[in-house]
Amino acid sequence: MNADAIRIERPSTNSKLFAHTRWDAVPVAAGLFHLAYFLGLYFLYPYAPLWVMLILGFIYSLMINANVNGVSHNFIHNPFFRSQLLNRIFGVIESVACCFSQTYYDVVHMQHHKGNADRPDENGETIDWISIYKHGHDGEAENPWGYVFLSFFRDNPGAIKRELAKRGKVELRWGNIELAVFITVLITMAVIVPTKPIHFINWRFMLFFLPFFYLGHCFSYLNGYFRHYGANPDKPIAWGVSSYGKIYNWLFFYNGYHAEHHFRPKVHWTKMEKFRQGIADLQKREGVRTIKRAHMLGFLDPNLPKRRGRAANIEGAEASTSG
Image (cartoon, rainbow, N blue to C red; front, top):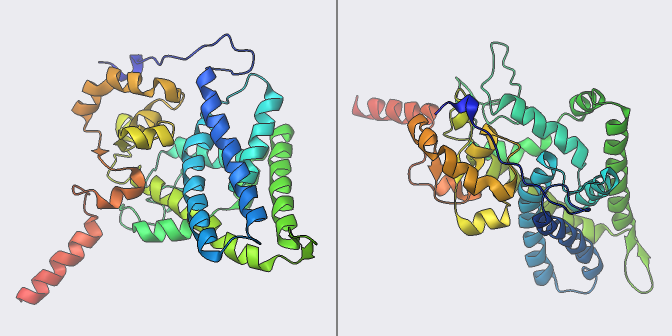
């Protein structure tokens, strides 16, 4: 099979609302529910016991991961609505729910697809800003825990903004609108305590919320790490690592099919299973890596490839002991 000859099936619909399929109502509903859940945390916090809020906060962290890697991700590649205005409004909703700009995320994610988790060049730079190899050594992936807990702080807003500016003033304006809206929401939450009567300076809620917000993005980076660890950054069909669990892919709108996604990023989530069936033999020949667990649990994979640096240290220690 000639990989260049592979064509993707694009869904079509006569819906006046949705651009591709009415099934996109499901991720739209998930995005709206995430926003409602986020606002609910704020209004519930003054009244609920702390142990209840801690459970709800942890669930919110998991929801950030699912949204970023499911709803928000699919929205980037195949915007849900025919109306450009509705797509913009949904982008604002996603920005508030996840507390970052959807349009800025689009820039980072497109850069990810330009580099496809590439290794550093002779100057130590990668095309993909979030490549798992960017901060690694000797062509090896970075330690997963460093990647997971530090990547949140490595974003370069200036570089993202410059790249976004290349798309034109309209895109830059909407990115800034999204930033302004979610920052305004957070400031409002930090200032106003939603009690009767209203109180001010809601420091307790922010002290509760911000760690779970950070944890949610750590979960997202954990997902991202094992979607590429053990893949082949030099072979397009093997750029990603796939996981085919049914429940996982229902919750993440088939982003578990990650090798397939990097091979053909515009395949709609509803067509991913069929697309995979069409290239399964080619994938097998080219050695596409798959894991049985959800990517966030990829570190539990019994066949996890060893990092050469770690293996070398072990061998060195053994040699030193034997000597």
